[in-house]
Length: 440
Image (cartoon, rainbow, N blue to C red; front, top):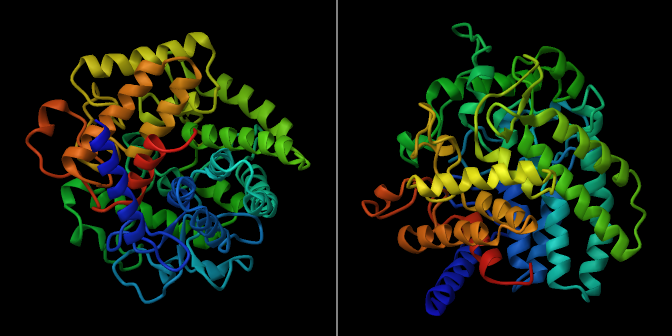
């Protein structure tokens, strides 16, 4: 076991070095050749285990793309010469919003707000580093401004629960939980601009979103441009408007981390206590779905809870939102998955006819999700289940390499010689390092 852990750690560090650019990491060099938002949060945590300076640079680079209104984009296009990715900076046209930076160019949407707990993780590894404390004090108001953006521009009912208007914002691009909402989008022939996907020329098309899904993604990008990527117009028109339970759980978790950091470093916490109190209560009251025994995403346009079990509903554990009864139901769900022959944790309900163990977010195992859920399980005393999530991921990476995501069915693993999606993947390396090194 010890030699395997050492080998995986060395391989993970080699991938971090391979994907390091001038001050930031890319997820993988061809499929995703730019800087991604929540990927960088995980990268900063991993670097803190062995190269704190790079962890600091990673977040400095990411926040160089923050908009004047506080929005933190999901992609920063540091290089305008890369042509292997669509949609590139020229398709986003973020210059329609006067607050978007001219350099670096960015996308017009955001991603899960992981940065609060990312810097707490870094501080836990280096509690005495004056350099890190100084950096955190500089970054703290920028993270607060980002969270304020979400509550100001994406929370029309003032619930301290924000909406997304594009599946890409959720990080779970083609999950079946979006299907019904996306079907409201009616695309007239010739109404979309000409575009050419790049992903299916690099990765297996059977592992990627379908063309019909991609057309709807492009439609929502065009809708964002129409409204200069500003919340009120989007909220009024978008057919796709959802309060994602995972995104909101991550925001609450980051707010809780920021409050602890404020207490440790003597920083004014500002609105954090109010955000946390209201967000936790409204999350639990609004998102718990008794019919499926999980937290679920709320469709603001249709005014109903999504009726699917999926991995996002488990992240509430990480934010310490469930009560004892609900946390026990989530733990039972995970144990039943294992008993039925699945590695933990599949990204979608294995009992659903929509489950697909190979296609992106419709069933496979995702490394960073395993880490979030395992950390949450430990907070509730489910250490054995947490160890199982960790060990299942170590098994996958050891047998199939450092890929973007993995097969969920145990019976199929032995027939495979690789994982799915991009190879030499940064966030898989980051999660190996977070699992195997450090104090938290």
